[in-house]
Length: 79
Image (cartoon, rainbow, N blue to C red; front, side, top):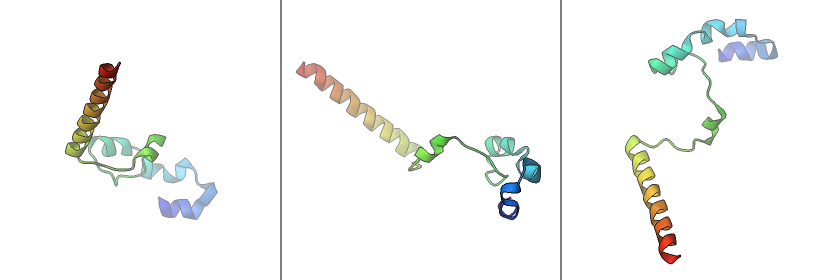
């Protein structure tokens, strides 16, 4: 598809790439076949700056939650 996009440039149409993009969502999303073809994602993908393991993610969430709770309880204690 990249070669086709380079070749056709601004003149590329959906019909030019339909065979490469039609029906890829089920293969990508359900079967995990990431190389099945072109797929899209939202702008939030630009906000991802790391990909932790599940364990790292849960540990990070717990640490941040504990810090928030501690900070808020200290605020109540000092009031």
